[in-house]
Image (cartoon, rainbow, N blue to C red; front, side, top):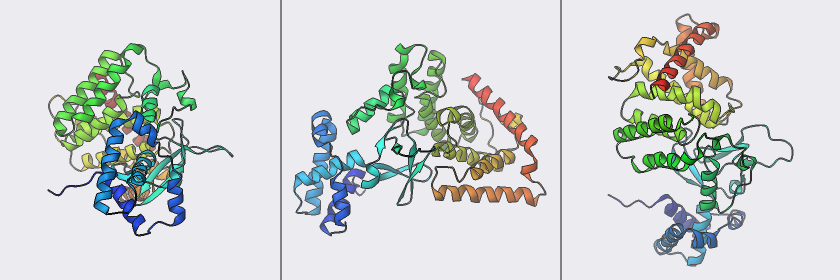
Length: 379
């Protein structure tokens, strides 16, 4: 098996080689050098990060044969760590790192007004809500659905600052309200540790995540819309799909779509809300084509006699209608539009127009609501 360099090492090596071949303009290089390194903070406060950057820098210098001093390469590595974005696909699957010095100057707020997206090698910064004249553009560097203490810890560890945004003001973040605060730290962190450490066997992940979710719900009366339940449900859906448990995955995706996302991502334009809706539609498409037998002990989808075609059309129609406001990237919108056109055409070919079937669609969503309620009651 060939040895593959970690993302950061490959990115550093590429930068050093491009500098050696004068592939960057003076303006690009000067802008990059203006970025913060926080090298003293890293060295003094995060030894493991510093050791990784130092080791990688030595390897890059040796491998590239560059004339650059080691200290300069160390600074490159520090800038990359502090200023890079996670490169994701249009469906938000992480695939690497992305560094744009201009975009790296955008400041952070947990109460952000813009989001970053990627379409191939293009970076998009889109306003998620109206930005007033002279209002600064803010993005979130971290998962802002986490409670304040976790957000602050993540920001200090990687970016070395304390956030003072409105969401971080005491008492302003609904995610920090819980009947018994003494249970927060243990209950919040342990389930997340499971999803991080136990990810090699999807079947084992399903069992462990379901157990963690049940413990949170039954022991602490944990709200659906509070971390770590949000992340655990995402992990569960992925693991269920990996193990071929499509019925259960559909039910969990329906819970996320109807009960979680409208609260966690209240703005219709939010990319994750749109991507999760697309995921539900895709699962409904699969079930409409080949319904899997209901495993013993699970909720039966058969007895609900759901018209998946109407569910699919209504989700896709909603996504298409808010296409211009959505903060998803162009290729995602093309995928959704193509699927919608195909589904809509199937209806028209059969002499049906879903635009005139609002009552029928409403009844299907009422079935979905009963299904979701039953699933939540069982847990």
